[in-house]
Length: 167
Image (cartoon, rainbow, N blue to C red):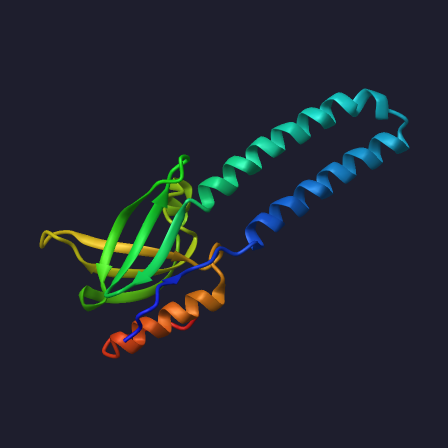
């Protein structure tokens, strides 16, 4: 049994994609304004666009990095971190209570609601009531794949009876 805590680290991939997209749009605007001799007219919109983007990206990075997946002791925890830095456990599933692990992709309705990661490993257990199901979603885009593999290995080592999807 593992005694050390395993916390999944966040990947920089999604944030780099957005920054590259913004850089391409900004470059296009600057090149178009320079070639059409309208740079002075577009300085204001470029500043507004940059400021708006920085506010958006700051909020987006915070909301995507606010949750943590931690394997600690005999339980798997999904925690949420608030603006003040305090954290609370949203879902805690004991390794012994895991009923299934599935690799999932969101359908159109789930993706539109933005409540679950688009590509994820979903770890299910029976809830506290017999008619509830608890689920921890491990995003395949926002967490480092090596850490997700370590988590799947850890679950497999503790629960060899479960089918663990490959990452």
